[in-house]
Each structure stands twice: as structure tokens, then as C-alpha cells.
Image 1: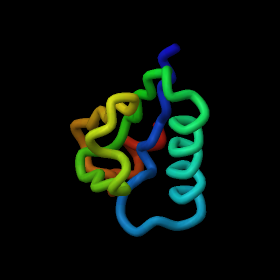
Image 2: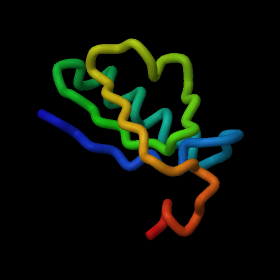
Image 3: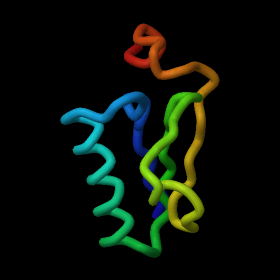
Image 4: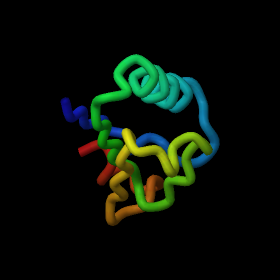
Length: 74
């Protein structure tokens, strides 16, 4: 199965929402290793270390940085 996750809030210092989203992605990768997870993130996403180099996680970067609030939330 292919799963797409809106990770446009994953930038800058993490707080409650960012930690919850990052942990949800990590839990889904652990529970469903056979599935592909597409994580759509802003251009300046640095991400947790486990977000790079894994076969089940495909990170797609948007053309805009995370600080552009109006683009992120519309």
C-alpha cells in the first residue's frame, strides 16, 4: 500500500505537533514495513536522522520553505 502524509509542518525546532507527526511516521514504518510512505515536507526540511536513507520512506520536498505559513496551510 502507498501512504501519503502531509508533513508541511515539519520544519524548525520541533514542538508538540511536530513530535507527534514524526512519531506517527516512525510507528507506521515499524508496523507496516512492506508499505511505501510518501512524506511531503517543505524545502528546508532537515528531519530526524531516521528519515533519510530508508527504503520504505520517500521524502518529497515542496518548492517553498516551511516559514511560508499561508502556502503551507492553504
